[in-house]
Length: 144
Image (cartoon, one colour):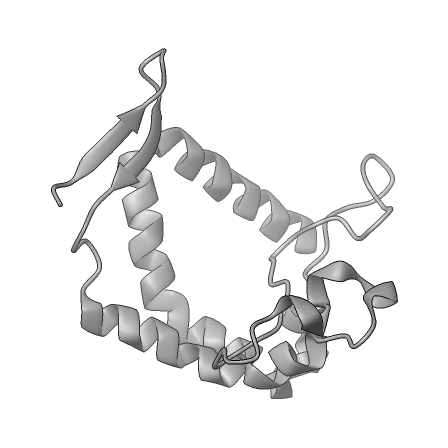
């Protein structure tokens, strides 16, 4: 299939389809990098729906290689704590006391991929790239 752009009725780009933009070998490297997240992903599973539906073990396929759900964010509001009295925080698994869980190793392994995706976003949607970059700069300044 050829590269495709899907537009809405006003001519706004809603989807870019770019087959082959990311090489299959590179895609395999990204998939393989998930192995270092196996422990925190498995820890995330809950056996009871009363502990949160996102991590309910029943919602994952038993045949999947890796199952679970984790949140990795440089800055988000903790549940029930929003502006103006609270500031975004780093998600729990990215905090410095959690170095042994494989998350930092995964972030390091994925830095090249994230740079590539960031560059693609800068070309495809410069406004969104600029807004994201500005948010990260503000988070960095608040942390200092």
